[in-house]
Image (cartoon, helix red, strand yellow):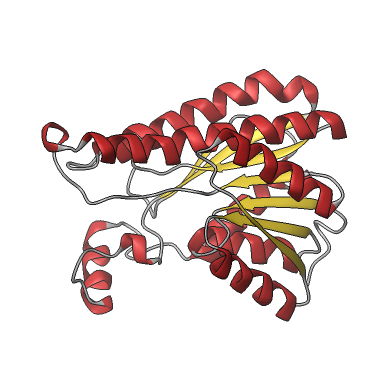
Length: 253
């Protein structure tokens, strides 16, 4: 346990699994009161239980961030249950089956943009409103190295959504730093989660592929991504504003 975030109230969207879960647990281990938000209560309850087992404090808030009313309620409920809102991490995202832009289904395009971009914007909109009342705070958005930093065939909707998150983050940072709200992003490359595994790929095949694809020779761990998020949210990063921090093992170096 560390006390770097002791007494702080932290909201993590997408906190039921993967990067979001690891981020939530990392904040809890460092003394924060954490609200984990997402659509699936069972997954959120799993994160809450893990936080408690590690000696931390967490609560679950179910919400669909693509709906404005739900995003507003999510932030209000989290702030009410935690006693404020000092930090928000927006990690909700989807990655649908790849395919050429010309063959993409309209529903897949809309689902990707609605979740990865509009849902993040709605979350941030209400987080900013709550932080204004509290005199400031820090927001970290999860983008991707696919988008503003790198493109890949078959990932048009995903790349467009994550590139937009990067630009939106930096614009919001300029809009709100004078109000004491610091906004930054983290852009991971392949991370050791199911999202980076190709259909039918075994763990050994995945490891071999990444050894060939990445200068680092492996995927990042969720703990490494969480460490970057916590740094950007911490007082030590007080002069870091509008940064999009890439963690991709050198893929875009």
